[in-house]
Image (cartoon, rainbow, N blue to C red; front, side, top):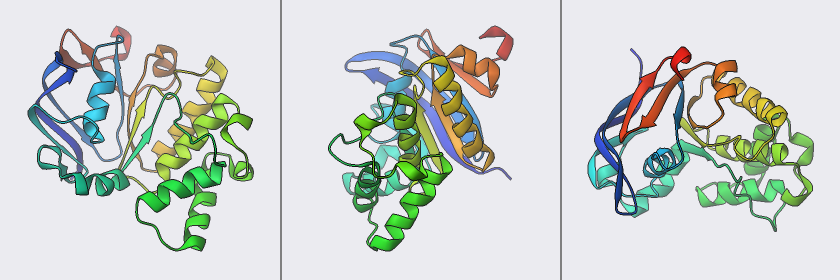
Length: 227
């Protein structure tokens, strides 16, 4: 029987005081890859922020990787984020630290203690995204595509049950977008569950997966030929 990783029931999503999505009901099963599409302002990023604990739920309910977000205590957020990997459009790497130190920072923040184990884990995830030799570099020394690969490596550090990707190719050129998408595809084939917000319809057509659309205050599944 498939394991439910994400379950939303009658969830309402707000941007500040404005209701942008209402009565959201959806579930995501272990091993799925799902796109989340929609115009700017349709609620995609706000929904993802609810899922990784940055925005509170006002109406409805949400369960994710075993956590009830309605009753989530602040002390539980680090444990939630150990089970979720987040990839951002603008990478969010610390500019004054090397790639390896960026990853070490996350491991320390999520409770890792043993330095050798931490270094080994950093090398392991960098290898997965083709960046094993770049651990000593600083973000400004990397291309946009390389920075996003590091961002993906960071999301993999705690072997998360779910990866949330918010416009991961939004700041990249088409060729680099495809390279980053290939990395995400490999991660998915290895068994990871991914929910990816995107505007990049060319990638959706090239790498088809279940697609949900935010439009008119609702979320609904769309077929490839109607995107």
